Length: 361
Image (cartoon, rainbow, N blue to C red; front, side, top):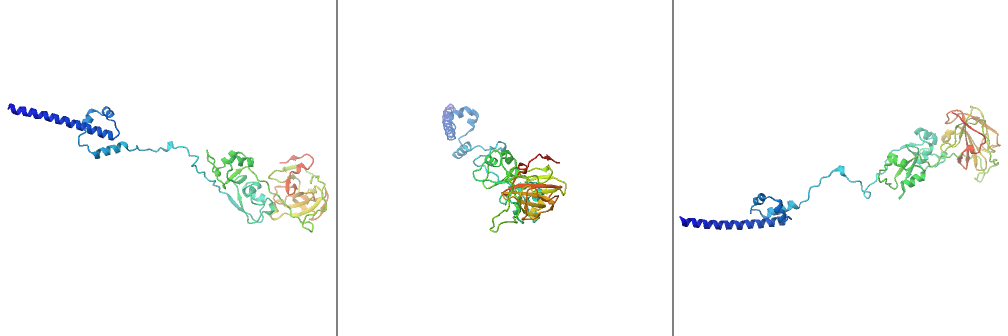
């Protein structure tokens, strides 16, 4: 019995020795696994509790070790929050082109620049601004022509390569903010980038006014205009009144003098009558019209007359009676529309007429 106990004690000692060796082997394998995963053995010994260490058995395989390594090295998931989206990059920002929705007007036989402008609530200048290719001579407005009608008084500008908003604003004498503020120009902060060949509406700008060139019914045989008489270069009032209902401006080529219908009208200077008829067709605005050419580059216009007492080719002298005031054509009441033109361009008659004037309501 004593012999059996000694054998068992000896065998137990061997078992303890074997167990110790196995424990050392397990610890060595654990060190290899943690080193492959990029984890330092010393750090692991501190961060893992003893119970966790003892729970890892010798059944850990190389496949499990690879899975562990993959899990440790995989990138973290990325969450996108639109509230933290960065500002647009100026190098990749794509500007939006202007988006305009203009009305198109087809010119009819009786249309004039003023009648078209009144129909759409704009000025006649804006017809030129939206259609810079048309002639500025009102009697050359072609029937059937299609006109772009801008929604506001201004100009439709075609952007040139390299052009800036400041340069465009300076060109037309308007504020940059007015160009940016027009919605259909589609100019976005902070870049305000312009696209070449796109079209911007420039509110408040002007390319100039329409001119009216009366048909020359009297001329020389060689085609060049030859005038028998030349004016004095000074002008008298064509009517006795001095009460003005409308003054000269970029939108109104002359002055309107309020007069009772039938009041006498006189030649403002010496010259030759070149037009004396009802201004039909494209001349409709003027009604009964007389044009006198003074042979020195100047012409005078007398419009809305009730009667005409001269004929084309007739030579007149300053102060001669030519007709009577009226309310014909596109007129809002009896008055004389009077113009002084220099080489077909309007000038302010008050700069050449003497005496005070007053405003009529």
